[in-house]
Amino acid sequence: MAEAKKLYIKTYGCQMNVYDSERMAEAMGGAGYVETDSPDDADMILLNTCHIREKAAEKVYSELGRLRSLKDGNPDLKIGVAGCVAQAEGEEIMRRQPLVDLVVGPQSYHRLPQMEARTRSGEKALDTDFPLDDKFESLKSRGPKARRGPTAFLTVQEGCDKFCAFCVVPYTRGAEASRPAARILDEARELVDRGVREITLLGQNVNAYHGTGPDGADWSLARLIHALDGIDGLARIRFTTSHPNDMSDDLIEAHGTCEKLMPYLHLPVQSGSDRILKRMNRKHTAESYLRLIERIRAARPDILMSGDFIVGFPEETEADFQATLDLIEEVKYGYAFSFKYSTRPGTPAAEREQLAEDVKSDRLQRLQARITHHQRAAQDSMVGRRVGVLFEKPGRFDGQMVGKSDYLHAVHVDDCALSPGDLAEVEITASGPNSLAGRLTGTAAR
Ligand code: SAH
Ligand code: SF4
Ligand code: F3S
Image (cartoon, rainbow, N blue to C red; front, side, top):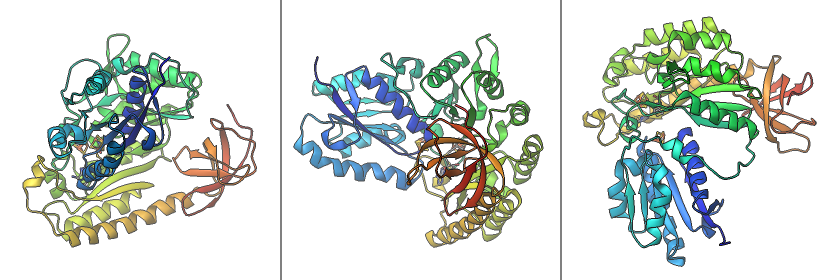
């Protein structure tokens, strides 16, 4: 048998890229490749890229520059660019970087093995189509199924029809599309058979999920979650990322009725100013967002909210920014991600007058100080409480295990006889800089 070729994948960007990289590795397994964790001995290097902010996109070109010496040393090495930069700037990449052999957009991954074969015969291969065939169906690995860790991502929906004025995703991922529920349920069962206990359902607008159910009916995300709830061995369900306008009644209700659905919700708002929200084309107001959170908290009072914020969007005044700070004080996020607005070519906001960089930096710093304050408070408030923890791996010290609480906080327990995949009730005893410490209160469930 020929020796397996080695594939090195470097993943940037969001969780969906992580999921896609796993699928690409599986698909390339069928073409004789095994994954390696070093680029040095690889026969093929694939950069799975992100285009969301300028910095993210620039990383691709600097990484390609670094790969030049590897290619010089090994002319048989094939270099590919996948992901959202590939979709947005595929032809430019080919032009600017002659060392790139292959460019594949996020909707064409199932064609990767054929594309790789073309590069082996000396051709360049570029595919940034949005074909209608079911990518995931063709990406399914047919080989033996390796054991997995206790947590996994599962893409259920892809693409976005929202067209927020700052965002590239509708252009790089295409229109909203949902996978059929039966395929998702099959994949979830297979993951559970391979050792997975927690599944995070992924979608650019995951709560816009509308897939065909096994009964032929149109299933909402809530319906899908209730069906996943029935899978034996699956202990936890999460989903991300949601848009406020797609937070339907049945999904809010699921947070109160579905025990496996974890009390954590990532619900980006971007700004607390209605004037800016309108210019961002978000199609909701600060008030409607706050009322929505009230309803979610009525269904699940202990839910931990997380969000995304952009500061320094064109025309944002100090008063607009203050409205964002006010919203943060009201919601008291347990986590939040915040970014300086980054001009993205081809998006409507790129045409508008931009704010000065120092104004953006100053606002980001002030916003992050408030977020950190609430994040700390939420983490500290866990001390004395009993929470479920899914253990993922050994910690730094002998006998220590680390995992994630129901609320997604990192938790470590010392001197325990636990294994990855164990789920146990833990009493939180201390809150450290980045994680919580706890002690077991009962026996672990497998
Ligand atoms: N589909 C998700 C995630 C989109 S990207 C959603 O709708 O929330 C993740 C985050 O990146 C966004 O929520 C936004 O806060 C940020 N982001 C997107 N475009 C950006 C830009 N041009 N500049 C700065 N941040 C941006
Ligand atoms: Fe981007 Fe807005 Fe779509 Fe989210 S909802 S992916 S921020 S366009
Ligand atoms: Fe980045 Fe594309 Fe994800 S732009 S955030 S990798 S959808």
